[in-house]
Length: 369
Image 1 (cartoon, one colour):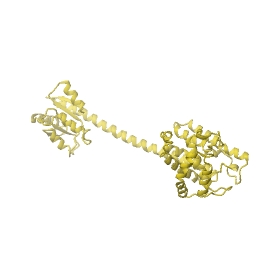
Image 2: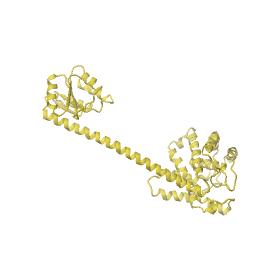
Image 3: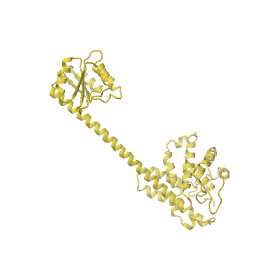
Image 4: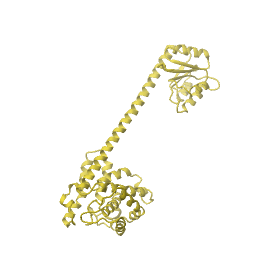
């Protein structure tokens, strides 16, 4: 079976039929003959043919029982089987085909016709395997390409977000830390009953990725305001607040030129709502309570916590404990009370995440100034 010729297993309890079949096929294929379904099953434990010619009427284990056994085993279920039978009624033929046979040849058979039928079926099987291999290779290529595009997208997003932080006098680690905080909040949120229904359709990875862009609008704010070492004036503060609507405009323009809508929808929510406050005193729309999307309420805690523990030219860095106390003090004012309680349960993990990111006391302007 190693000479390059296809291998046919011929199974029939009649020695005359075995001899006739072997004579008809031996010039074209390696033919292995056996006289029972049981012997076939045993042979298949160590050898796999390209095709099986299987007699239907055999004692002990007939062709129907034999093919049922083949189809129930992973290693043999895809071997093509052609039934050989003296029965020419439609009901028997339908039964054989329904059990998984690919053809039904009536005995006595014409040798040239038998050879031709086998050639056709082996060609079909070969084309099927080629198609499977092609599809697998194509899928691998698509998966590789998709991964490359995803990596490129993430790299561009990270670079774009870090560019904002660099202009803001930061190191870019603010983005990494707020992503870590958001990840902790989302992970904990999934374990709470209150928000279970609201978040069951969320793509958590998508939200985390889009959180990188929460301050992207600052790219359009003037340097003298963005990097001012002193407290902002009223007019300057009003100017810097525009980064929300500017960011929304950037996302809208990108969204209108891509089919990937879900990512930019999440980015838009985070950009436009993470400066809203629970009591309605935030910006840009003065949303109040649960009018503020849950994503924005989460981002507000992550963003403010990092701003508090980061040093700026206009303020010192607060300790973790001081930052926690400030957030507690704004429970029900700036922040969703339930989310503050959720935050308190994992506050130590926030501290660990900040230490892991090797915080250099940098971040973004404090929106409260």
